[in-house]
Image (cartoon, rainbow, N blue to C red):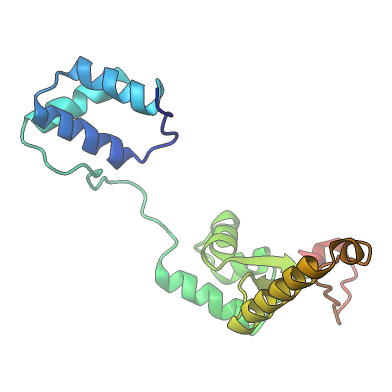
Length: 181
C-alpha cells in the first residue's frame, strides 16, 4: 500500500471529489477512495456528500465562495503605516504602536509586526528577520570553505571548532523590563 498523503489542501480534496464525481463514482465510493489516499480524517462523510451534490448540480469551482463576516483589519495601508512607524523608531513597543493606531487592538498590531513585517524583538528593538544578498554570499562562501577544510583534514578540524551566534550590544540600556518590550 502506498503512503498516506498527510494534510492535503481543501481545494485538492474537493478537486478529487469533482473528478471522481465526473467519472461517475458514487459518494460512498468517493469517501472510500479519499480515506485510502488521505487517511480517515480527510473530510467528514456529510461534507463529502455535500460537495458531491454541489458538483452533480453543475458546480465547477473547488474554492470557497466569498462569505460575509468581520473584515480583516490588516489592510496593506495599515501594514505600511505600522512599518513606517517602526522604521522611524525601532524601540516602539506593541502597546505604543496600538496607542498610535487607536482602531487596532494590541493582538492585531503584534500580528502585523511579527507575521506580516517579519520582525522580532532583539535588545528592545524590532529587527527585520531578513538576510541581505551580501550576508547570503558570505554564508555560502564560509560554508564552502568549511567543507573544503573538512575534506582535507577532518580530525584536526573538529578539534579546533568554536561555535557561536551573532552578538547584539544595545547602546540604550532599558531600566525596567517593561521598557524592553
